[in-house]
Image (cartoon, rainbow, N blue to C red):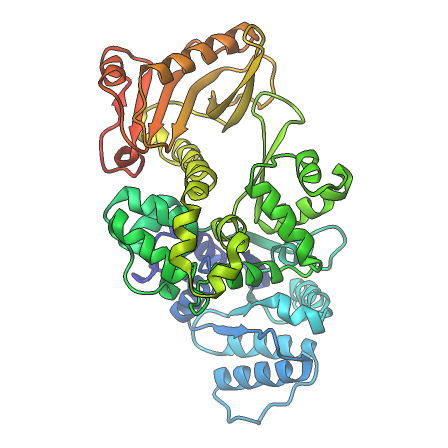
Length: 505
């Protein structure tokens, strides 16, 4: 349907997503094709699709949350008329079938690619649930030449609504050629987006805001460039009720995106319990003095929206570990809400000072561990030459010591299936954000875990041992890494690609 589009310079990263959308537009088939684009609010979906629409001269339509059915029909009609070059009020379309048909006819006659983007579709579905049915009708008629062709992209932030568009017996099931979920930036791209030189400071910004690119324009003042600047920056953004990024308002805004989250008090309580360390439905229920079964449905909703992450133990079946995936919500549940009265009285500095222990143990520490796993998934193969398959966590029993060891990072060999009884292990890692440099005792612990894995029937003999440290390493373990071929030392500079990775000599 056209040549390849160069990605606009204003788009950071998103090479893969831009290529997929290019392929969608370049499909030579004249019939109608549908694509779904979804993702958490502020991840840059609209920014990406507006750039695409502008590049090809397509028609961009966006829904408004507070707008009813009739005003939406009128506004969409006027946008279609403007795209067709006719005067305002010249078109009158009173139902969505006519609107969608007219839009397709207009983009097929206009210069450029016949592209229509309908952004924030879930807002329309609240008052016009018939739209997917009309799209199905147009799609089916287009396949036999009875309706216009073209390309339609449906976009939205309510993840459960967008995912259900293609599920079960829904009208659009089997009719979308692209189901693109736009993630937040990875931690390295987020650092570039914020323009932060110091990787330790970039990690802390990532720990409280994550990689959603839409937060940068809302943050007050310049990004912090030093540890001394970070605390005041947090106080004037996440802990200032007068700012757009006040975490309580933002968390409420995010939770309102999903129509299934109606009893917000329950969901707030569940999120707080998970953020404090309740990692299973039973533990969440115990924390809230409710049954395990009562927690299953809320946790499933939060997982489907992307606000809670559930990862299976790589070695044990039926042993999921639940954590809060969204940094803003985690910050709100752990820092803002417990002292919201002080925050609302503009005492953010006092709140932040008293919350530092919680921040380091419940936010920065777990985030550093997750960043280490992200490094293993995204960068380790290119930067170390290791061959890594599935990456995750594991809990290893130690019968002799009558204890269990939590492994922050475990990587299996490529092709190995999680929970297989004789898994080949290629990487065993520990990630610590504590102020103490890591030393030889940490390496000895990993060696002990490697031995336990072998005793339990796994195959870890060739596994590399990786230590991730936010505050460097003692000379003894640096010396060990220089002498041994099975040791990796990754400090904050190496984690961000700024410095060398010690080991694997």
